[in-house]
Amino acid sequence: MYTPMVFERYERKYLLSPSAKDAVLQAMEGRMEIDMYGRTTIRNIYFDTDGYDLIRRSLSGPEYKEKLRIRSYRQVGDKDDVFVELKKKYKGIVYKRRIEVPAFQAMDWLLAGGEKPDISTASEQANFRQIRDEIDYFLRRYERSGMGPKVFLSYEREAYAPVKGSKEDIRITFDTNILARGKDLLLSSPAYGDPVLDQGLTIMEVKVPRDGAIPMWLARTLSENGIVKSSFSKYGKYYMETAGARQKIIGTLFREDIPELDMKGELLYV
Image 1 (cartoon, one colour):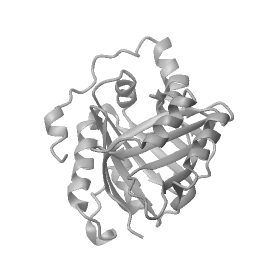
Image 2: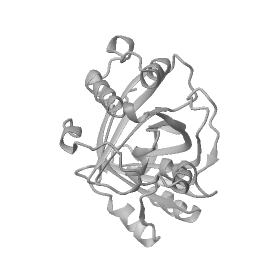
Image 3: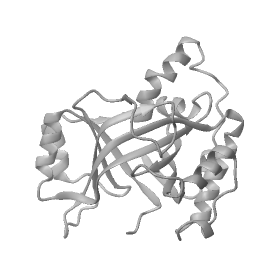
Image 4: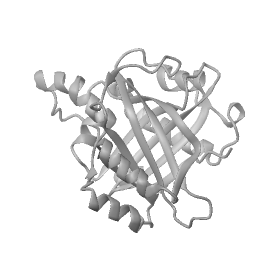
């Protein structure tokens, strides 16, 4: 099964009540179906600096934001493959680049400063070395700021794609049971932690190409049910309730030593 490694698209998030989710699912009938990934438990390890510079910048609402994470779609062992993902957002467009490598190799590279993985020890992937080098550059740029794993975040996801024969280019996902923790930061560990969402709520993400638009049937459903776009961040919500709250108390929330970004240089691959 082919797994994309490069994404360029618009992603819109919505916070749904149970009744709002039912309305969307009803509108999707005959138009969307569970995709080939089905229902999965997604596990992520988010990387950040010791001062949580990445998530703090993201929460300030800039035109440009970035994040680094390791992701798996199940509980993994050391030799199982995981995705190392560099995700950036610029003027509303999401650019995601990732490579697939064994978990032990990803952890040695990202946590212990080990050698960069090579194509000889990973499945054949388009642009593997280029993406790997971009991730490695990102790590080195923040090395003095204590870049490392900070949060384990998991959630149950249902992913939908257009029914066979449809000309629409859209993907819709529903995330529930969002849990986060700041310890035991291993993808080989069970999914557990503090709830990030109130019980019964769902995060819906609508993903379309950068030159695409939300279908009329979905736009109408959102409007009729008063469903509006949200800037909700799973990692951001957990940060604000834990590390962010502590930083605010000790007066370090607005540190001024966040590394400057070279916007043009960062987006050369777009």
